[in-house]
Amino acid sequence: MNNLIGTKEAAEKLGVSLRRVQQLIESGTLPAQRIGRDYLIQEKDLSNVTIHGKPGRPPKSNKGIY
Image (cartoon, rainbow, N blue to C red; front, side):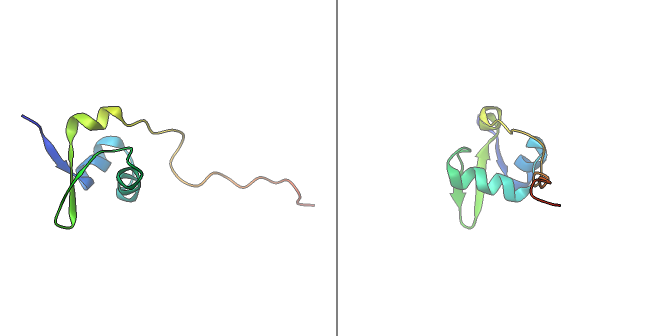
């Protein structure tokens, strides 16, 4: 049987924000089924998602500052 989870639980399991999970779904990286206004994700699909780098915006470079 497939375990279906919501986006909030998927975010917790992946260690990312809810918005990041929504972006992964929108880009097609994370398959999900839309039920009404919510998405359900098969728990087994989480293992196929790779998260690169640290969360958040990268630091600004100091190039060009005098």
